Image (tube, rainbow, N blue to C red; front, side, top):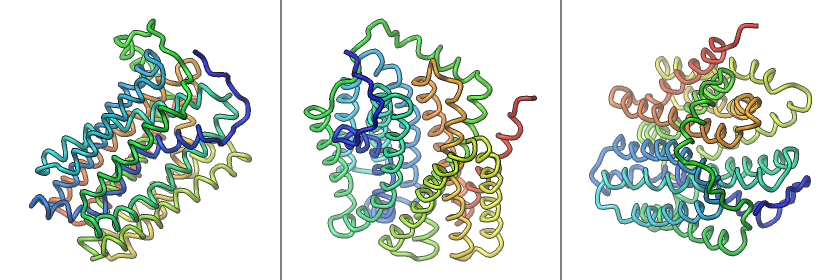
Length: 395
């Protein structure tokens, strides 16, 4: 079946369910950050080993998005969604009873593969139900939910871990997944039926043709490298602010929420700016700012290395991402009208692949410096603006 396309964005129960599905990734990433030390102590492991469970999650998001991108066109929207939700619930429960850190790392990879179903299929269902103009408003709501999740998730995670142990965080995540499974089963309509003419084996050819587009690659890499700095922060900030600067997990979660407010606020400013300027013009100004504050943090970490010298440029970097990332995404998809679904899957996977390497960089540099996060963010900020400048097509 094909869902009736609407030109009016209705923020009903269906949209709320789709928003919850897109929140799986930030919830799964951010809720357990304050419990890094508790997990390390539980397994007799180092904090760097716990960080690898986050790196594994990023690589799971990279692979999973490519899998669901074609599967949802072939089998309809809801069947792959059921499959992903079951994987997510089972692996979340298994994480709570993981016997060692190695098992937890493997389970986090599989958990991410399940979480991808909500991310990819929610976007596809919005495209099914709404015209481009109406879907833009719905996507704005989904992005708002994804921005609020990093504020609330560490707060809940810190207090859940303190009161019930870090295992309770994964039990809570599993319960959220089960609730969404019931909501999808009974309240979410199927927006596109199966099309068995779609060939899964042809997806690689489609993805490769998207990657060869120079405009797509320029904007996708620019946005992906910039966003990788955010994931370097997510990976390395527990060590910097809890281990080095001595914040309690509860205070760290409040600081994490403060930084999330920055990206939410600037993303709303971006919406206002787009009424007056093109996305490319905003990107031309915001990218050099992003690179400047990231290199500034890198420099201050190497020279001064105190709390405020890290926090202030870090806040500015994360806030500026609210201007950079949406406009880079718009540039990547602008010329992909006939293959927007595949292009969305490719750019999403590419972003998390780069994020995975940035997370690995934090892990490796952490062996030599307490401020590995700052070094990695500085590198990402500088590389993103160089990528944008050097990959520009000649006029």
